[in-house]
Length: 316
Image: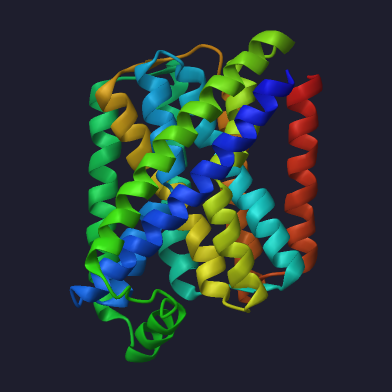
């Protein structure tokens, strides 16, 4: 089993490095082409941090391991709220923007309910995948539309947070970084999936549990790094916006694309896991509405609840 653990660690490292290379190189190229940093943040950065989940879910769906594909997204969404926001709030209470309370968080809840409805028969067909993927297109256009209506102060604040993306001196370095990032993501996904499946077989643990725990937490490393750094720097909007945006993207885009390419049928994922994901999404809304922030005790509550959930998975 030692070899499998090493394989998983290598896979996770490659996924993290690949996402970092892809996001930074793509952002640098976009800035070279005079694309607004705000647009970069709404598209390339958000997409890049969810690339590990996308690659893993597509590969597992195509290879017939639907339990890992669904478990990866469900587990990632739970991990994003309970662990990433929980730990970030423990570091520094997270201030919440009114837009997140009125628009993005309710959309995340509605999207989670839609997915639960589609998956009640443990299947996601191409038609359902098409509906989900259409949803991410609508959400993206809505984000662009609302961003144009944002005050200049809000735009300036977001652009300042993304100013760390520097333009490389040579365009070929940017293109090479994008290709290397994609290669690392694909290689890392292969390593992570193969190692996880072997451990599941050896320990006689279902692929669903492996997907919800090891694979999900591993593919959430880019979101974890982004939100923790943002919390340390007291950049609350990025810390919480990164998580909520990623959760919406995971369901609409990742599951939409995966089921469009290959319909998913997996009885191994119990609906209790979907309900837990939905519960965390719903609980987050009153938490961030309280004084317009996620306090330390609320963050601790989310983190403790995740610990109880994982204990239930492993022993229940």
